[in-house]
Length: 628
Ligand code: C2E
Ligand code: MG
Ligand code: MG
Image (cartoon, rainbow, N blue to C red; front, top):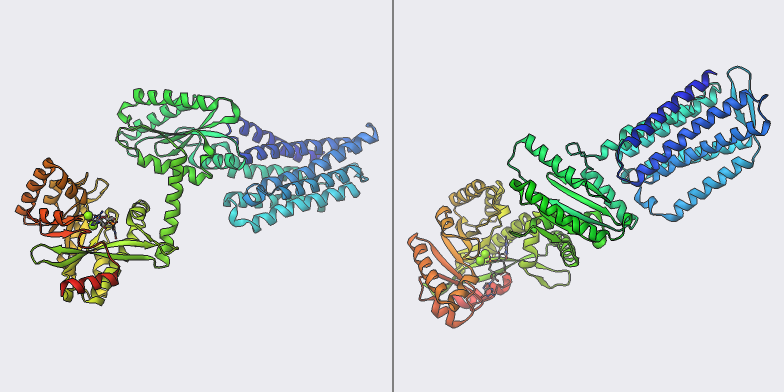
C-alpha cells in the first residue's frame, strides 16, 4: 500500500491549500473562483483515486459493481481535472474568455468525453503486491480527454503568450509539465501512483505564483491593491455588473513622517473598509477607491451617496491636517467603457478640482471631455507624424517706426479634413500629456526655417517671437536643443525671441533660469507673455531677465472699457518702462483702440486691426506689401 501514501501526501497538500485560500478575504475575481474549484476538483480526484485503490485491493469483500463504479468515478474526476486546468488557462486570455462558442464547444467536448468514460467498459489489475491500475476503453478515453486538455492548455500558453500574464503563463506551463511527467512516470512504473501528487504540486505552484490571496492585497493597509482594482473593475465591465465607485483623492505629498503616514493610511483604510457591500482598494500613494457592487444590494446608489457624506465628514474631522481630501463619486461605473477610461476619469478629475471644491460627480459630460481629450491625444500624435503641425505668423507693428518689425509664431494643426485646429483646442492637451515638447520643437524648427528661407531680416522683421510652455522650460536640455536647431538653420540667434509665461505649475525655476541664461548668452532674447491675466504679477518681471512684456488681450480690452483698469494699466506701463523694458499690446482690433493705445508709452501693437495670424506665404506677401 506504499502507493496510497503518495496520494495521501498530495491530499494533505491540497487540504492545506484550501485552508490558506479560505483564510483570507477574497476580492471575487473569476480566476480566484476557478482556482478554488480547481483545488476542489483535484482534491476529489485524489480522494477518489485512494478509494478506487482500496476498492480494487479489497475486491473480494466488495460487490463488483461498486469496485467498477469507484474506478469510473476516479477516471471521470481525472478528466474533469484536466478540463478545469484548461478552463483556468484560457480564462487569462480575453479573446477566448469572451468567445462563447469556444467555451461551449470545449465544455461539450468534455461532457461527451465523460459520457464515454462512463459507458465504455473498464477492467482493473492488481498483482496482490504493488501493481494496481485500471485499463480498457474507458481508461483509454480518459487518457484521450486528459491529453487533449493538457495539450490545449500548453498550446494556449504559446499561441497567446503575449496576451497572458507572464507569471500565469509560466506557472501554467510548469504545472502542465509536472502533470505530464508524473503521468509518464505512472505509465512506465504502474506501481508508482504519482499523478495525484503531481497535480497537488501544480496547484501549489499556481498558489504561490498567482493565487495567494496576499498578492491581491496592499502591503501597508491590508486592503486590496491597485493591481487588484484594475482586475476587479475589468471583470465588472466584462460581466456587465452594475457598480459605483467613490474615489478618495488625498494630496500627493504629505509632510508627515513615514510612521505617521503609515498610521494615517491604516486608519483611513480601516474606516473606509467598514462600509458594507463595498470593496476597498488603495489605488495610488494616498488614494483609495471604494467600489460598490450594486448586485449585492438594491438601493445601492443611495447607500453609496449617503456613505459619501459620512466619509467626507469623517475625513474633515479625523485628518484635518490632510483635510484637503477630494472625493470623486462615480454613481454608475458603466458611464465609462473600460478600466483605462475609468482611471482616466479619476486621474484627470483629481487634477481638475478647483480651489475649495472637495467633491465631484463623474457625469456624462466629464466622460465626454475625457473621450475628447483622448482622441485629441491621438490626433496630435498623428499630426506630428504626418507633418500637419503648421506655423502661422501674426505681424507686430512698431509705433515708433510705423512698420512691422516682428511677428509671433503661432501653432496650428491641420485636421485630416484639411480644416485648421486652433491652439486652444490642442495646446492644453499637449501640455497635460507632455506632447507639447514635440510640438514646441516642431514650431521652433519651422520658424527658424521660415526666417532663413525668406530672409526675414531683410524684409524688416528683426525677430520672431516663439511661445514656450512651462514643460519645455523645465527641460534642462532645452537650451542645447534650441541652440543646435538655430545653428543648423544658420539663423542669427538675435532673430529669436522666446515668450515665457508665469505659471503656478512651474516646478523648477532654477532650470528655467538656467535655460534662459544660456540662450541669452547665445544671443536670444525673452519676453513675458500673458501679462495681466490671473497668474501674472509685477514681481515676476523683476525676477525674470526679459526684455519685452506682452499685455494680454483681456487686460488691454478692459482698459478700453473701464476707468479703474485705465488707471491701473497706465501706472503699470510707467513702472515697466522705468525698468527699461518694452511693451507689446495684444488684441487691438479697431482704429480707435490703436489711437487710444498710442497715448500710452507702449512700443508695439499686435492685433486683428493690422492682421490676423497668417500662413507663411500670406505673411511674406503681407510684409512685402507693408514694409517696402
Ligand atoms: P498668445 O501667445 O497670447 O498668442 C496671442 C493670441 O491672441 C493668438 O491666439 C492670437 O491669434 C490672438 N490674437 C491676437 N490679436 C488678436 C485680436 O486682435 N483679437 C483676438 N480675438 N485675438 C487676437 P492663438 O493663435 O489662438 O493662440 C492662443 C494661445 O495658444 C497663445 O496665446 C499661446 O498661449 C498658445 N500657443 C499658440 N502657439 C503656441 C506654441 O507654438 N507653443 C505654445 N506653448 N503655445 C502656443
Ligand atoms: Mg504668445
Ligand atoms: Mg499673449
